[in-house]
Amino acid sequence: MIAGQQVVQDVSFSVPSVGITAVLGRNGVGKTSTLRGILGLISRRGAVTLDGERIETLPTHRIVQRGVGYVPEDREVFAKLTVAENLALAERTKNPRREFVAELFPDLVARRGQMAGTLSGGQQQMVSVARALLNDNRILLVDEPTKGLAPKIVAQVADALREAAKTVPILLVEQNLEVVRRLADDAVVIAGGQVVHTGTAASILDDRALTMRLLGVSGEVPA
Ligand SMILES: Nc1ncnc2c1ncn2[C@@H]1O[C@H](COP(=O)(O)OP(=O)(O)OP(=O)(O)O)[C@@H](O)[C@H]1O
Ligand SMILES: [Mg+2]
Image 1: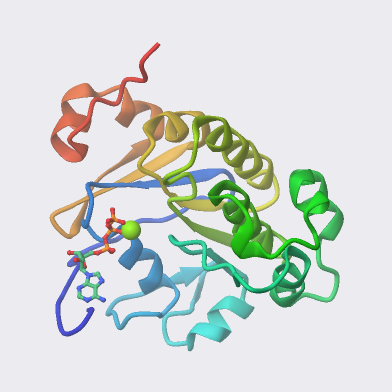
Image 2 (image 1 turned 180 degrees about the vertical axis):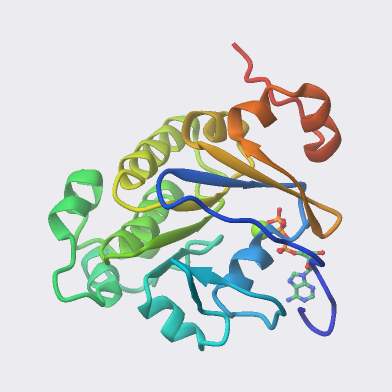
């Protein structure tokens, strides 16, 4: 429920404990609301289970402490803080994975002292993903990480997510089907406020009639 309006009706799916699961659906269908619902950022009914434990009764900060990392749609970096300060503020575990993040994003190491607001969109996205990866999460919720980025940067962000997914499962909202094809093992399609399809990402993307009907695009990646 957002502002008294029911934005999704019946969204039920599970995310395997390894790999990347994509959430697909047309604009405004409720993908972001689904992630925000998992985190308890909007009011919702039903159950949210993490490794067999019900977490939907917990307040958001406890859900985060249980290991649900969030990379929001609009990156939300602190523009007036440096890259290093943005990252330091995100650390909430005893042994933050600084080396792992530095290896994944060498660009950010070089720009430690730069104010985040002066970074490119792609670099800001890297800060946003890096913040989540510093902590030992049990799952990452990542909302449209490649939106508005140049193709070369899309590839970099995708590579980083693929690397990250070796250590933590990712629930990924992504409109770029080329990225979905490269990264996602499974996919969940939302339409009309409901989950209308689940399966392997490849099987969904290869079904042209299905992607046209549910996503309004052909799942085929241009050669
Ligand atoms: N703060 C809000 N107040 C009122 N309605 C909202 C609010 N936020 C979202 N909505 C509505 O809820 C529905 C679902 O929005 P949501 O952002 O979850 O969709 P989405 O699939 O993430 O869209 P997009 O592809 O644009 O990111 C939309 O119809 C949207 O207009
Ligand atoms: Mg959204």
